[in-house]
Image 1: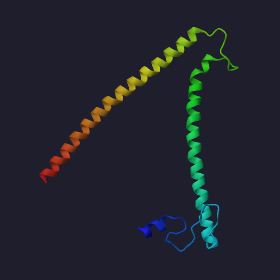
Image 2: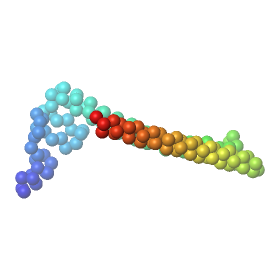
Image 3: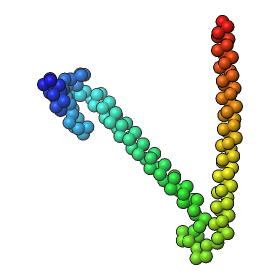
Image 4: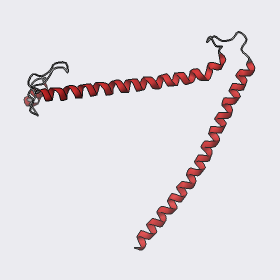
Length: 139
């Protein structure tokens, strides 16, 4: 039991490689590393940080794009200065709503047609698998 407790304490673990140091942070350079090992260590740290930053930026870009799409969807309600017009034409608002509703109906129709095609493809796939199984049974 005491053997495992000693291994959990920082700096007390058994060495697993050529380097016998256990850095307390990534900022401290172990003195026993060769210049090549130090360069490799720094390259790994840099790559890790760059991947971390890249994933963070990708998430932020997704949020920005979503917000931009929402803004584009309601931009017609505002004038060129970004202010709502004093007399917003109700006809424009109604026509935009109808346009969006018709696009939704179109997408639903396309989804329904694709579902039908998917059912047909699944039937063909099942028949083909049955034929393959029959041929294997005959052999």
